[in-house]
Image (cartoon, rainbow, N blue to C red; front, side, top):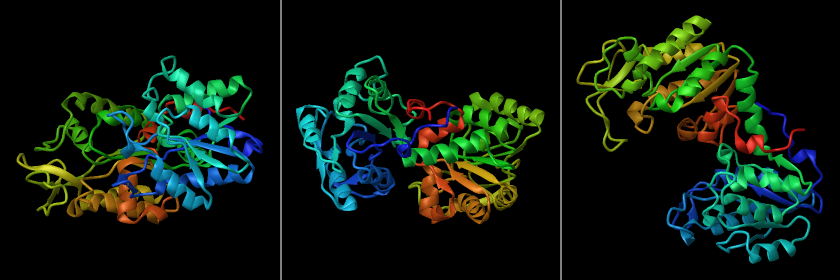
Length: 410
């Protein structure tokens, strides 16, 4: 995995038109932004380029845009919030064509330090196509607006989209620089180095519902980590592979043999693979998800046939916390139970607390584990919380991410 990429500190942007791919995929309610985390995360890169005297052209997707271009998924609210944060008007190009005459005119009128935000890239409908497809034309039009390109959208870095990876080809053709922003650099430093070059002991914690989502991650991390901890819904397929009764718990019967292979692999490599030793069980899944629920704790090999495992138990919490104590690097992806329910959040809270109290470098791999850390109030105690769910998983699999790979090497 090539991780030595040019960043915004490695080229002179003064007087140059710099296209920055951000992740402004923010939650909106009645046209108002309900969580501005992603906007705040993009500010250091934007401010650096402004201070250097660049003409900063921002682009991003927002939402899935299933019904074609529409005002509900316009980036107009983002332009407004950005203007407030930067203390300077961000010129918004509302044209649904994204790169049409309105964009060309707005860029032509820019002075050094100015900022323009283009409309939602997915309004073009070609954003998500594979390279070599109609996305090529869109990528070229984006590149025509700029001299250099900066990718700062880690949450989209695992997709070879027009505005993420394909645009770099056309920037290179005109002799421009393709770099990563500060947010991307931080993700590469933490996630990339944790997997490629960790300070040991290295403990990886995987949770979440399905084994199938994490097949390659389990495989890759078994080779890289010293200890692999498995909790959440995916643990029950491993417990079944050990021959345990798991009652009505979530299970992926097609992956039982795979789990047996992984346990054998851990033994062969001399790695610790820790599974829950006790489980919080209930008669059924809570409905609604945060409803009060009666939970009892049983040993993981004694789950009653009419009960469903929904969280790790106190003995497992202590076991997992103990494994983290001596670690120097910890990566965590996926909750330990149904953390949205106060009664079933205990396992996830215990793991978050153990990470908060260790001196290790602690890296939270996006998605539900990031949400859990934020909701449970542990976010400021972690070394790094990834901004990309799917992207961080693919990084942990050892895959090359198109958005990272496409940047110029130093």
